[in-house]
Image (cartoon, rainbow, N blue to C red; front, side, top):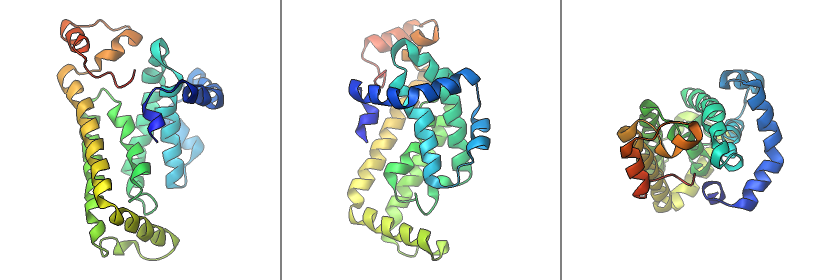
Length: 221
């Protein structure tokens, strides 16, 4: 999973070869997140996850440097709309995803990438909810309301896996929260990400320049 979060030229090239043409078509049509959901009508939790990866993370591996403007202006609004729709519908806590932390954390990412303070507060809440569910794996009655059937059996199975390595799952949630706080602190301080100023053609303030010159986070951009 970590290949998504570090610079890897070979992986970037693979992403570009497979998905750049499709993303260019989306870019050229100026389609909205709402329109994409109407067209795709995701019917399973994993389809929602796939859409978020496609529109939030994939562009970050394809459009780097000066091209990253496309990420921030075209694809981030789409991914944020999808993440909001998914979490409003409770997809992130669906029985098939509730204890699959590696899948569930994707719903946080579009909000983490936002320059909107309210979205960052929502990201914190989502991560805390994820951590609460991990903590609840010790209680087998917690999910009784989800009943029986294949989805419930999958929930029981994934809960048991998390329970068997709860400390590692707790650390993953803590890491996610710390990563979000690093993002949120920048937005709270500047109202935007200074490292995006160049690609977006924004004037850099003295405080922002000092922050970057001092080694402030750019998150691999």
